[in-house]
Length: 564
Image 1: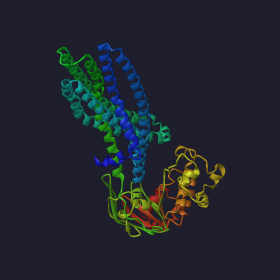
Image 2: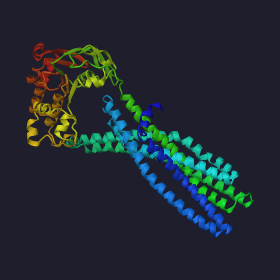
Image 3: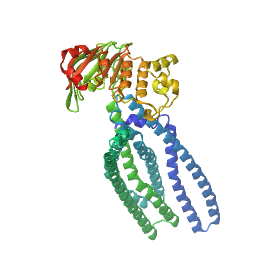
Image 4: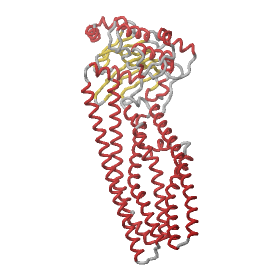
């Protein structure tokens, strides 16, 4: 399938020589068993002929052969480990590059991303990469073994070819079913990982509401679904292995009985040849029995690669035109309507945001505030109407160019388990003066003086207060020098005093166009906005300054009085 080719190529980028060596050594390692069989024949024939000289020569050859086989096995272990290390590293990097290059790909899909980078990779490493080499090695071994058998007895070779059709038929019948079961396990694993994330992130709330039993019930449900999917996969895999073993045993007994008949009737088979066939029967049984399962599992692992590639392609947006250098002057919405999950989220909204001004978006929960903000950020393009940045259609704007002009402050600030400075700079280099200025403007000066820029924030910022995390987010905005600032409930989880301080700092960023979603009806803050946009049921109900809206005594006036 063409969609998986990009990810498949990552296995072999700057890794082809290792792959070729790995494949060659795997094949040679399999063929070494034939050398052992030939040596057994020669030793048997020498013993039958009573030639001590030939037996002595065969001892020397045997020692030489064992030395070569041992050296080759050691080389195989090293080359295989090196190839897999580079292949898996390249694959994981390509998947992560795809995730980072997609637009909002992580929203609601973190479980799928984790599964693609963890559980699925283990399956791909074992069944796709190593499985491919094992399949090729087994096929080479079978071909060489059949040639050797043909050399000693064409009749037994013909019988072998007929009997070996059974495992091939088994692989064709069960391969598709196993692929579906592997994908089902991958899907359930993604859901399971997502549920674990939810529980761990919401642990304080769960404890606060004594909801441990409910959380455990959700966890157990997903755990059971995952294990049930694994059970179904293992059952199918077991059936394939069972039929493979039966096919292998049938082949082995069939060839053995045919060889015994030819030896008993004097059809030119010596004791040495019979020993070779007995040895080859045991050696062929393994590859014959393994091939159906190897092929089916490799096919299933290939399905996981296709799944990851299709997920990345679904989130990818094609590059479009850029914005003019400098800042975004105006953002306009003209008769914009948008449907989300089957219902109308926004309807016929027309707005104009001017450069350097501040705007508050208020309204009841579900009124369309966040959806409006996300449309301004160009998270969706399936809307009717027109959104423009300086008269450039948002649908024609390259997302990578847009993010250079826009900064976001979210309610849940993302913090790396790194230092304060690294979290502010996002691991990039900035002039020292600019970083210091951003830290001071964001109100982090006192924290830096007490703990230093190298203070570790901890996992998800656990060593910081909510206000300190928000200040890091604000410092990022100062450092970025974007022309538009979007904030969605940036201080909803903070106390009133901290929230007021932070919002005052945000509103003080007069070089930016500030568009802020808020539930809090603080008159001191609302009076600082150049304009307030009031949303209700997906529509813009009214707009104006705080004083104008209070004088009108309509919907906003009611919201304000209820909140206060």
